[in-house]
Length: 366
Image (cartoon, rainbow, N blue to C red; front, side):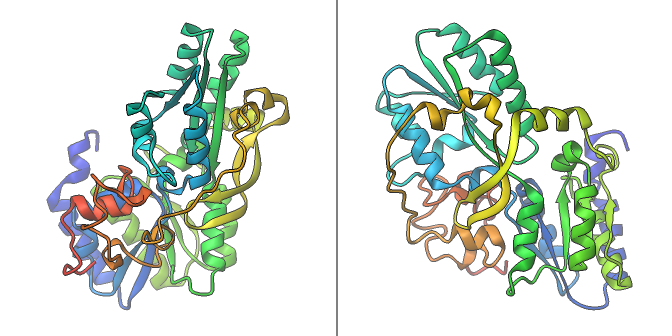
């Protein structure tokens, strides 16, 4: 196949669904890790078309959603200072902090700018030498290489008014944390194709072997997901626990080694807090010591932050797949995309936003 619409062919989708019905002989529970995959599954109704007993569990693969509340509160405290430009990707500006969000802060006069690339933030630093420019660097392994390149570019330019507030997280430690939970129901994973395009898929091999769970690297279109689910179910039915690559058009075994080299140069692995989940060991990235001068958390001392999640938001349970959005009493009423209580209702990859945009209600089976 060459064109995008070919990955949305309804006839091929029906054939894959028929093959799934022939293959599955018992219930199976599969987690898709990526929030982009969640949106496709829910928007296209794929999760409701699967054979009875095959249940999709929506995982913590939304980069905006897992960014901890404390990081967002720190970003707002920095943005509120005079002489600061806070640059961020669009979804982040509407994510609720403890008391407000970046968009509301901008309305009150803070210079908060939506950018499409971290290089836009570097350019802002070049254009505004008398001001401090801070880029809110969030996301999984997918966005980390570009953010690392922005730091390297700022170093080459000799910029002293550019820094990054880093909150990068890593997929494999999150998967193992889920599997170590005695309440975990996940029997197979669909791994995020864009993460694996950077990192490859070898780091999933020991996870599959240790926990006896198939891992299928999967794309984001309807046929990608249906084929990935079929591959996972085929393994489960045969008692195999291996890593397979459905997303062969974009992912290679070893990934993008040049991008990995940049990550290894600029960042170091560290413990990282996940919004609604808590701190997971060795689950994130921080700037390496030689690039500490670009660390906004060190450059700006904002003092103690009293961060507190909205008690009504069940984001942690949503991100771990323990519950679905329609289990939340605030879903669709007090919590909507216009008035979100938590990040999963804001982000274009959030599970709550996916359910809401698809018209799922608490009376609709999830």
